[in-house]
Length: 120
Image (cartoon, rainbow, N blue to C red; front, side, top):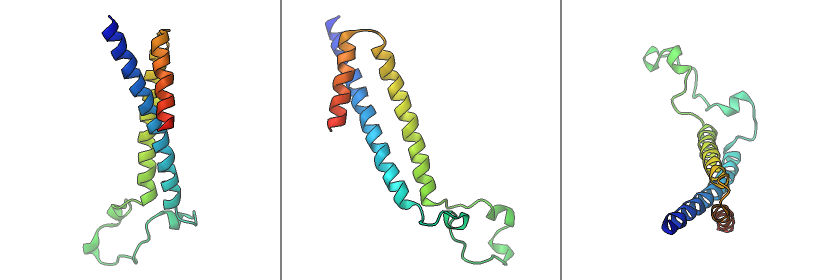
């Protein structure tokens, strides 16, 4: 039906816009992650600095101290980048599958959505 086709084209258009938004969000997140990295990439600089050697047994056992409870800031940026990448791949494959239906209107919706998403 014509209403179903219009709805399909709009959904593909919105998926394409979302794909472009995720792509740009990933680039912004990469820039922030690079700024969060320490200038020195030594192992000591990448891990959070420890105050001093813990000699008090009440502070925790060495096995518990091996896994830091507060991870470095760059690690959380990397986790966010990974999630953005997964979302981008899923959206890309969904748009690709829609385009592979060989419907000209769906194809134009994907192109228009990519154009609009990049422009925004």
